[in-house]
Image (tube, rainbow, N blue to C red; front, side, top):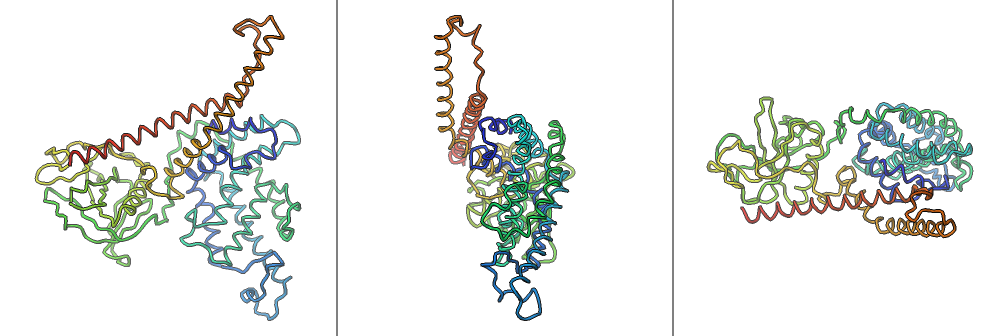
Length: 494
């Protein structure tokens, strides 16, 4: 985030600040998704559920009003377009007011790391645009991300943000679209009202303009935070406790004691995963469930195929209050399902305190581990554990690991362009320095005495970012090599 705020210096026009899909804006967008999804759920889910449940017919565009769809509005026959419009304005004002109030009252709910990032961005924009006429730019820089790239897209398509299980129907989708448009105007602090083609949105302009003061006050409070507080605040769960992250039929076997593990010992069970529990029952409508607290999970790993002579088996290792380790083996129907469950359980347990550094990819059979041939059941594992999903395993829009990978890809894609621009700036600076030396002969040959040419901020930012990209690429290559070596070792030492 420190690098992101430095991108502000390359902008000279406040009207274009972070408006394009630049590397900086994409990185910030993915960052908000990675750290702020729980916060988004807390703020928006009640009002989104209300909109879906009420399923009102709402329309402001006179070209799209369909009087045949207005039966729910009134029992009267022959409802006019004006009545439809008035009713729609009333409902949209009610929804929009609830959304704005929920957002501006959510300062304490917003993740501290996001607030610190906005504070850094606010400070740099304020330093870059000091003119009185640019007073609102420091607010627009934050609201452009916060409203236009975070809350508005979630309102427009709730399913992509796991606010709903299904996409909205046509009627509800139109309501969400109108609300997303209005919230975008709120994020623009009402500066563009009346200048667009959609003048039929004018009835919502008063409530948008009235909210500007409260939005600015909210943004001031949002960035009123100490940088040091980030390290002192505990990490929050990736998922809402009430959300069923994943569910479906799997086959399970729980290793208990030294008995022989049979390949036929797996029982078909229906599993549910939330941020609090991994539970299962005989069927999806079975009244009695067995549950494993997620906080007890200390490893989630694949199992060697030769362990049960079965493919797509994973293990969930838990630790009870006495420190005893227990293992549940779960078989999935295919590799895609295996990757999805591995990723989902790892995300739910990513902040657990007692995660194991190593594990056994095999099973304990006939008095020894099939993977390393060690005899003791409690001996230290022979392979390192994985704390996150393997890159590329699962495309999940709410997966922090995938969001991080997307940021990495954006950096790689922009590297050549950034290097070219950086080198052009560096060459131009060198040419300018040489020209100055020819004009002023008093300059010392090494430039130490009289070279007062300042280093351009854009040059230093580009140089720093190129170094970061190089470090990330090396780390990624090391990670891939380690994964390949682990896979080779398993094949050579079955």
